[in-house]
Amino acid sequence: MRLRRRLRDDLQARWRRLLFMLPTVLQSAVAAALAWTVAKDLLGHPRPFFAPIAAVICVGVALGRRLRRLFELVVGVSVGIGVGDLLVLHIGSGSWQIALVVALAMSIAVLLDSGTLFSLQAGTSAVLVATLLPPTDTGGLERMVDALVGGGLGIAAIALLPASPATLVYRHASRVLDALAAVLQRTAQAIEDSDADLAADALRAARQTQKVIDEFEQALRTGREIVTISPLRWQWRRMLLRYETARAPVDHAVRNARVLARRTAAAIQREAPVPPALPRALVELAKVVRLLRDDLGAGRDLREVREEVTRVAALLSRMTGRSVLSVDVMIAQVRSIVIDLLEATGADRSAARAALPPEPAAAEPSEAPRSQDLDAAPSEDPAPGPAEPQAPEPGSQDPGTRRP
Image (cartoon, rainbow, N blue to C red; front, side, top):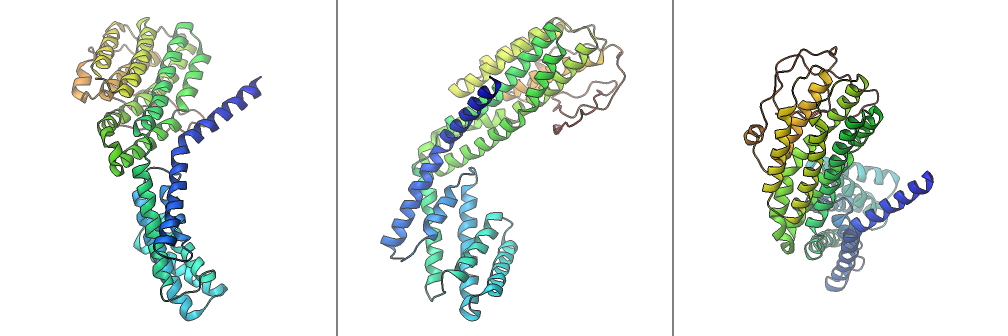
């Protein structure tokens, strides 16, 4: 049964990946066909294979840096062809000639620019010239023109057949926000049930969010590129700006949720008294995260989200009488997540901090200090007193980030 479910999930993931990449596949196919037609039929080049190659590479399956890729492609091909034509015309073709041509072309490319595609294109173009394409008086120039035609038509395909930046960014942002809401919900349930295993599950889920965060950032880069290149998508610039505003605070909220889940497991194992308002606040925060997801996607004003976060912040004033360090850290992380979510709606830092109730003075901790948590992206200045303890767990790979 488990194998069947895993197979089904894998097939669904592969299908979603295909659907996500389908616009890029279509752009590549159209651009390659147009590049060949223009270079062969309009420009009269007999074998313009560099044109469709340039178009496909320019559109690419790695989204987000196409303009940079076009520059690297055209200049790299030009360097490779120029070096290859010049040397092979005088020294001929052969093993040592290929080695010399490739080494020289790639060295020149590295000196001119650090881009990987740049040096690779220079090297491969030099190989083609040295092996398959005997140099001529006009062949080098024609191949440079082919690369330029293909790259330009690749950009044209992106501009005229653009993916929807709204759909792209919303899909990836929703995955991050859904994951954050699930971690908060699961942590609240772990506190209610005093279930350390459930808290550990929440921590594992939080640790697995880095991939979706990275994909969200990549989607934002791609969206920015689309609205820059394609006039058909300029109307989505304001929408992208809202997601840009939310990106870093949401990332910080996820990191703070990791620490929250870890300290929840520690508090449950020690049977520490947790304020009754804490799990309720987490459930409400999970609802707010989903509301943020929906309102960002719908383009609605985020005032309601701010009001809901402020209402949850009021619950924190009831969390007093603390005496266990793990519980202190749990409450501090909830306060940080509140600030993160307010900043995600566009509130500045001072306004977000002002929404929190005054933090009650913590009692003397009953736990022995350990080293500081590395997952946290604290939204508040540290309170006076002993530093938060937490030794990194074996095998933990989570990077710590701290705000300036």
